[in-house]
Image 1 (spheres, rainbow, N blue to C red):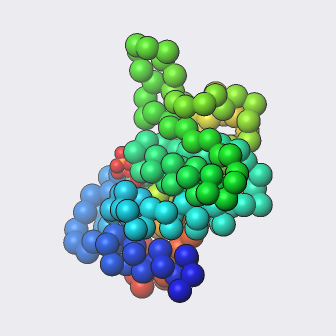
Image 2 (image 1 turned 135 degrees about the vertical axis):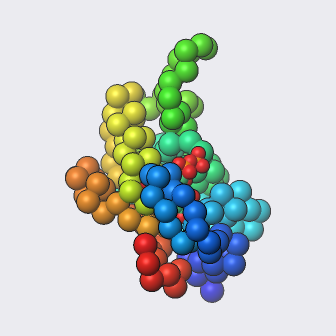
Length: 180
Ligand SMILES: O=P(O)(O)OC[C@H]1O[C@H](OP(=O)(O)OP(=O)(O)O)[C@H](O)[C@@H]1O
Ligand SMILES: O=C(O)c1cc(=O)[nH]c(=O)[nH]1
């Protein structure tokens, strides 16, 4: 099995939960993909890094991150996978809200101003979270070159409206799920 196939196997085994859940958007669904159980898993996380790098390598970015919390371990997995390939890739964290103390930065980590950055997510349902990250990155002076997510659930219209390249490693059909 290649990395993409191995990661899909891990997600199916450890990440997919069936049952009624309330989503981030407030909508309800009959299943959930808990990708924190994947991006923080010792076997699966290195695969996340390599699969997401492979998925986006043509986009030409040198920093990666997204809206905390789901995006954080995706970004750090990519940073480490890049380092293992001899490439320097920085990561950053976009806070859900700015903080009033300290340096009051919304985007934490190495400065993103003037840099080509990739906005990542663990999963995208409405696209709301990753679009919040894109907005904050642009406010911080970054050039967002694309959006990438591990599992695409939905949000096609919102994502298309950004005009940015959008990549997902897997969709519902890969997970064997028929309803969004
Ligand atoms: O495309 P959307 O409709 O925005 O939904 C997807 C978001 O929902 C989840 O995060 P959640 O809001 O549960 O927060 P967390 O990352 O802090 O757990 C997930 O990690 C994505 O960030
Ligand atoms: O939309 C969400 O909140 C959401 C869906 C999902 O499958 N997994 C997740 O972590 N969040």
